[in-house]
Length: 189
Ligand SMILES: Cc1cc2nc3c(=O)[nH]c(=O)nc-3n(C[C@H](O)[C@H](O)[C@H](O)COP(=O)(O)O)c2cc1C
Image (cartoon, rainbow, N blue to C red; front, side, top):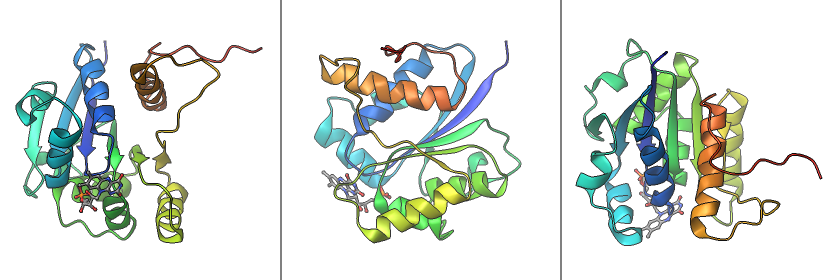
C-alpha cells in the first residue's frame, strides 16, 4: 500500500461543506495522509454555513496548520506531497496564487506546489465570474493547475444535496487517481 500525502487549503468562499466531505472521505481511507489549513474567512464560513466546529473539522485531518504559520513544513518545497487542493477557493486566494503573492500559508503552499511542479487542484467558487477571475483562473490552468469548479451534473439524477457534493468529491479524488465510487458514473446511454 502506497501512502498518499495530500495538502488541503480551505478559504472563505461559500461551500465549506465540500472541504468537510472531502476530509471525511479521506479520513476513511487508511492510505491517505491529510495536511489541513483554514483561512480566517474559511473559519467564519464554517460557522455560518455548517454545523461543524473548527475542532471537528480539524479532527478529520492528520495534521492541521495555522494560515499565518509561514514556517510550517508544507511551506517548503522539501516537503514531498502528492497534491494540494484548495476547496473552496475564493477569488482573493486565486488572485494571490496567480500572482505569486504568498502572504499566508495557503498561498505559500500553493506557490511551492507550482514551483515544484506538483499537482494543484483549485475548486473556485464565485458567481458571476468577472474577467479578472477568469483571467486568473486561466493563468493557473495554463501553468498546469486543474480547475474543478463545483458544477453539478444532472445525468445521474441527484436527489439530495449530498448527491451533488458526492459528485464534486468524486471529481477531486479522480483527479488525484484515488480509487472511489462516490457517485454513479456516466456509462453510455
Ligand atoms: C458568507 C460569505 C460568503 C462568501 N462567499 C464567497 C465566494 O463564494 N467566493 C469568493 O470569492 N469570496 C467569497 N466571500 C469573500 C471572501 O471570504 C473574502 O474575499 C476573503 O477575504 C477571502 O479570503 P481567503 O481567501 O483568505 O479566505 C464570502 C464571504 C462571506 C462572509
